[in-house]
Image (cartoon, rainbow, N blue to C red; front, top):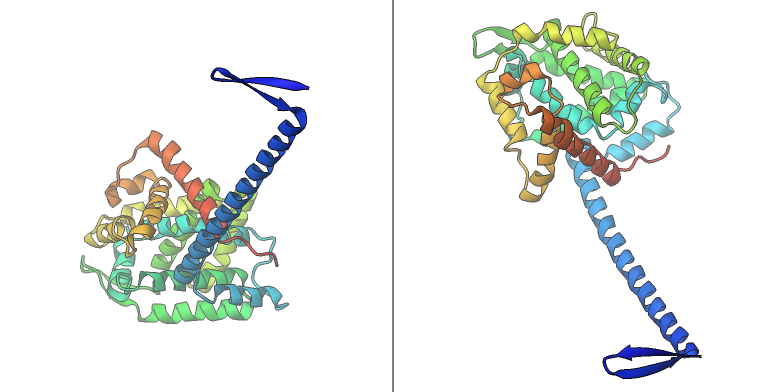
Length: 325
């Protein structure tokens, strides 16, 4: 059977076998082209994923983090928290990147706590070193065997013994002061939990939120915090009780600028970090905004900025996939 095909003023006739053969060749050519493009894209994405994952591991978790974690997984030694505890779900989630940044911003608002950081920390010259030490402590106490977790606590307590001085307002401070330890603790726990509930892959139930706060209280007591909160309501009340002590100081403003505006990153990394910082700002409580000199745009933050947080955490999960035990 012939099918006429008009092309300008000429009539071209095709036999069915010829048409089918031409269509098949076109289909194969298109399939091969799509397969080749997909393969090229997969290779490119794999390269991006490896590069981003390596950067996050080296700068945040440390180059030997995976090896250390695998040793802990393989170990049958008892640990403070089992795999079913909320603390493990929260601390394994990519939302911890936002929670950690939020904690640093809020903690800086206590003049005595910030004085200790400014006077005893080399955070400007070695910001990733400080972040790695914090990450290592959380990993050791959350996932490590009891002996490893206790060693991490002992190291921190030993460092705190040396952190003493006089703040810019003339008051003396000590990192072993139970009141300051409590402030650092409640600001940290509230930040981790807030970020997880907003951006975590699997938010906690109300009951699990209380359990997470109780889990963190176990570590807090070992660091010298007296009577840490064990429920989310108790955590919120305790955090608010510190508000009258908080101030906007040159150190806190400098720290916020450093964390949000001028981090020590190259241009490409700074663009991605800017998204992380913007998402972090959307999680901050209203009472902290004037002290940090940060504006509040309710509609923008409820939509665009929190959407950025979801996107950023998805990218981090894609770059650093959880490995099965």
